[in-house]
Each structure stands twice: as structure tokens, then as C-alpha cells.
Image (cartoon, rainbow, N blue to C red; front, side, top):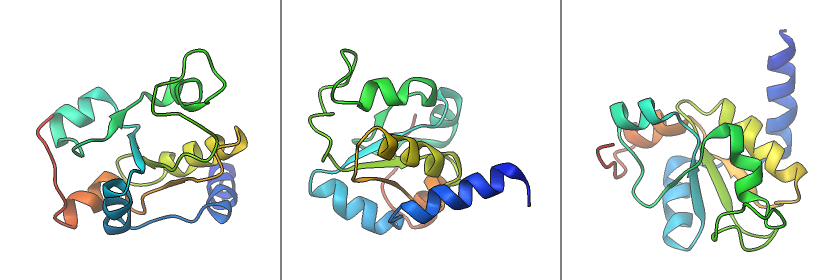
Length: 126
């Protein structure tokens, strides 16, 4: 098994990953969906309405409530953050990193944006 596969497996053991439908229901109740896909991916494939686009390279700084550069939605370590990427791989690593920061309710969407779209959930043109 490749090293990255072991790291991914270890990250996912810590997460309570959600289906696209569960993520949509949580978003309707105030959870923050964070889209970590590239600008090109969002423009090409569309976006989840209401999701906050944050580049993976700066995600920790924007979502850490103690960072001077955090987004207004990062109100506390208990904020529910659901990360989405294209297929649900890098989002698992990002969610585990957010948990390392103390965001205890961070997780990701199983299957990523592709699964969201396949489930027939809302998508806006990028």
C-alpha cells in the first residue's frame, strides 16, 4: 500500500464522513460546506449553492477561529465544517487537518462533488 493510501486511511478513521444528502441537510441547518476544488474545477463543473470556496493551500488559516485571517463563518472550534473536493480524497486529508487545529466537527463528503452532482443535489454554474 502506498504511503499516501495509509495516511488517507488513517485520516478517514478519525472522521464521521457524510453522504451528499446528509451534507445538504446539515447545510440547511447551518453547517458550512467548504469547497476545496480549484477555480478551474468550479468553473467547469459548477458549485454547491452556499458553499464557501477556500483554496486548499490556505484552508487552515481561513478556518482556524484563532487565526487573524479567519473567515467570519469560522466562529468557534465547534463550528460544523464539511469539506468537499472533486472525489472525496483530498477533502478527507483537509478535514483531518482541520480536526488537528481543534475543529472537532470537521468532516468531508463521501465521493466529493461528483457524488453530490450524481445525487441530483443543487449545482450552480461556476
